[in-house]
Image (cartoon, rainbow, N blue to C red; front, side):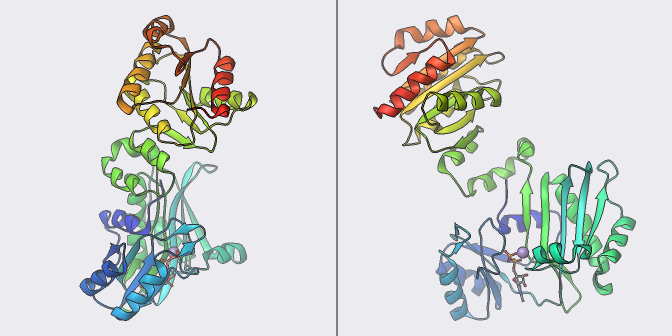
Length: 383
Ligand code: GDP
Ligand code: MN
C-alpha cells in the first residue's frame, strides 16, 4: 500500500524523522485556515499518489492569504498524470540550501536491503539516475546485521554530502532504516532531504510503501487503507480483508486459492464470458467471509451472474453453502449464482442448498459447465 505524502510524513515523525509542521485541507477555506494557524510562508502541496507533482504545478509556495487561495484553488481538481487532486497538504515553507535524495528498499537480487543516497536530489532525480549514475551512492545491508554508523558515514562521504550536513544525514538515515524495518515498509524515500541555511537537515517529501503482508500487526494502518485511491469495490474488499481485483466484465467470480481463481477466469473467458473480478477467498473461507465476498461482488452494477467455484480442501463446502444462504439474506442478493463445489463435505453442501435451488441459485457439476451457465446468464443480461 502506497501512502500519501502527508501520511508518509506522519509515519516518518513516529520514528523521529524531522518533517515540517502542517495539516491537510480539502477545500480552499480549509487551506487558508491551516496556513493562518501554522504561519506564513507555506507550501501548498497536491496529495496524489504519483511522483513529479512539483513539475506538474502541484507544489506552490504561498506567502500570504491571497496566494494560498490562488494556489489552493488551482491545485484542487488538478489532473496530475490521471490523478485528480482532492486533498492538499499545507506545511510551513522551508529555506533550502541543498536538496539530497535518500531511500531504503529491498534488493531481492542481492538478498539485501539497499540504501541509496545522493547529493543531487530534487525534482530531477530521474535524470541524475540516467545521466550521472555515479552520483547515487549505494549501500547493501545484510538484514541480519542492520545498519551501522561507520558504513553510513562512508556512504555519506561517497555520496558527496556537504560537510555541515553529514551528521544530520547519518542520523536521519538511521531513523529512516528503523522506519523501514520496524515500520514494515517495502520502500521509504525522501526526495528532497534538505539542508537549510541554518544547517538543519530534514525531510521535505515522503514516499512510503507499506508491506501489505505485515498489515495484520498494524491495526493503525486501517486509517491509511480507508484513504486509498482507487476502485470502490477494491476498497470495500480491503476493508473486509479479501484478496480482490476489479475487472470490467459481467461474471462475478469467487474461488478459493489464487490458482483456482485464475483458472476460473480463464475458463469463463474460454466459454465466451467476461470476468468482473478476481477474488480469492483463501484457504480457510467460512460462511461469513463468503457472504462478505458476495456482498463486494454484488456492489458491482456490471455483474449479471456470479460464479462460485470452490474446491474444498481446508475450506469446507458446507460452510460455503451456508455462506451463500447468509449472503442472500444479508445483502438481499438477487443476482443469479452458479455454484460448483467439490471436495470436503460437498455432498453435505448439496443437501444444504437443495431446497433453495431455483433459477437464481444454480448448481453445476463441473467447472466448465458452471462457467458456461454463468456466462450464458451474464451475456443475456437478465438480472
Ligand atoms: P514532487 O515533485 O512530487 O517530488 O514534490 P516535492 O514535495 O518533492 O516538491 C517538489 C519541489 O518543490 C522540491 O524539490 C522543492 O524544490 C520544492 N519545495 C517543496 N517544499 C518546499 C519548501 O518548503 N520550500 C521551498 N523553497 N521549496 C520547496
Ligand atoms: Mn519529491
